[in-house]
Length: 253
Image (cartoon, rainbow, N blue to C red; front, side, top):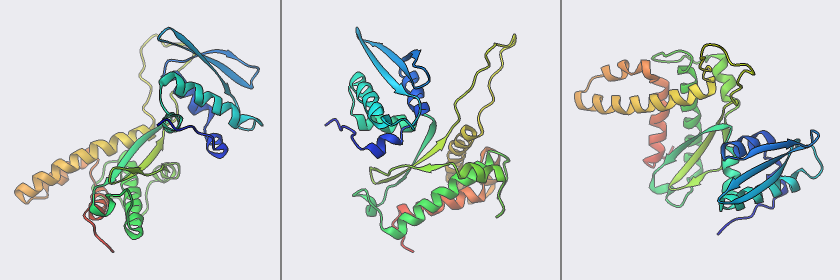
């Protein structure tokens, strides 16, 4: 079943820049600027041509109506539901992290309230540990965290939960890459945004933590954890993952 989005409030949450980034990623091209009020986009696909007029500002009186038209056209072009397209648009300018609680208490896509609170708190701790490690790899991060990490955390968003046990979605916004108008004589790789570095550090750190835990269980030594610090593993990350594991095991407290 293809869901149609008619909620005005939901449509107004769509950002013009997010939609433009999505259109560009899907092969649409901007054909014209409409006096600063919007832009015309075209797509050639399977012998058919699709066009949409993307509003430029959310303050426009008919913004929700125009965005609904864009959403409908894009969904028709892709043969998907508007709800699916809308979810993907909202994550275009963000890295999406899914944290799953595969416990019996979550088989119906819900969690007991006390466990849900713990699950969100430990997920936050995990993201903060990665944000700190992206700045400086350390065995443990003290109570006072780097301001850059705290500023980053204030911009991270929690999305709607997904089913499949209980899946918490975390959106880590990443600023769009801006390329210089004139190319340098020498190829220069753009510096990776800090936000992207955080999510990359998290992925590498979790993989290293898993390997260290397996090795430590086999030989009973803490050395694997110490050696994994350079890959983003810290006591903070370990505590966060242990807390998430406790929820998955059905711990109550």
